[in-house]
Length: 360
Image 1 (cartoon, rainbow, N blue to C red):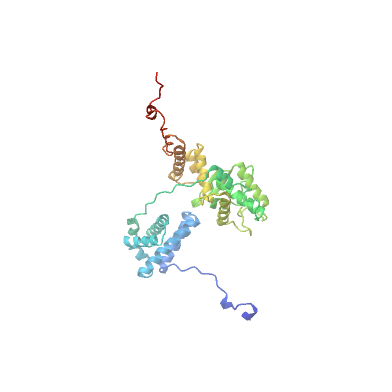
Image 2: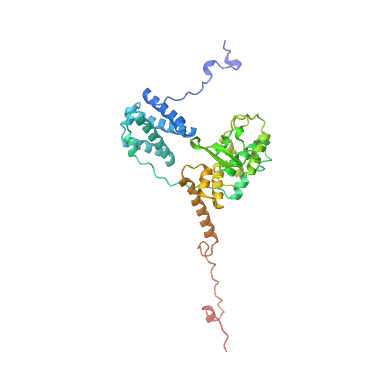
């Protein structure tokens, strides 16, 4: 029996149902091919979950674009695409103020799906091969100065706030891992309790992009920060469960750490570029500035390509050039001081620049 709404209980019909996922545009055959492709990305190619989600979203947007211009898309229609159809999709996304990097990722996802269709025997999607990828200038990493990075990871930065002490210890431990070991935030939050780098541990194995494992060093100060969090955490940390927890005991969200860094940079007067990922950039740049080997830094960061790590050499070179131009007297940054006007009463020969000599 349903109580009347006047008593404070709404009828079942007024209770909102959880949102259901919007069906993928296309016929049954196309949807099956997309499901197989996503499974292959996650299981066979071992792509990161965020990458798989982004590829799925990009493909959905492309199929929506096709559906608006010619009805429900099919595999045969995708195989028969013309390059102008792909260019029209990219132009539409560009008009929606989508950045070049996102467009490049969307095109990479579409090409990946096209290769999946070809391997499944549906034919080659020549249109995607005929479209050029947008040209991008690789943005240089924006590391923090050493003093700013150390201040941002100081566990006593917000000791007088209303947040619980164990939360302060948790945030400090995560930030210590980002700067002290060069981890991505997803890698730090992906650690399990059994992997906790406690005092006496000099290295920890993390899972990076593509679920690739790598070993990174752990400084004593980082291990001490993790130990302080573990001892203060009010929740039971089982060996196979996440090491870092949210306020209610669930896995810690990256957004919480981003908020913590935003608060800290406001207190320290740091720019908006002071983010959790900037601590990873700072790790690499500060190592390189202290004669760290590029190949070793590549392994520590988990970069698949050395060219990605080489960006930090440009950052260091730019920093050195800036210091040179600011300090060298011949750099031309600071104009020479103006010469004083000659005294009108001074002898003419003296005013003209000749040495004045008293008459003999």
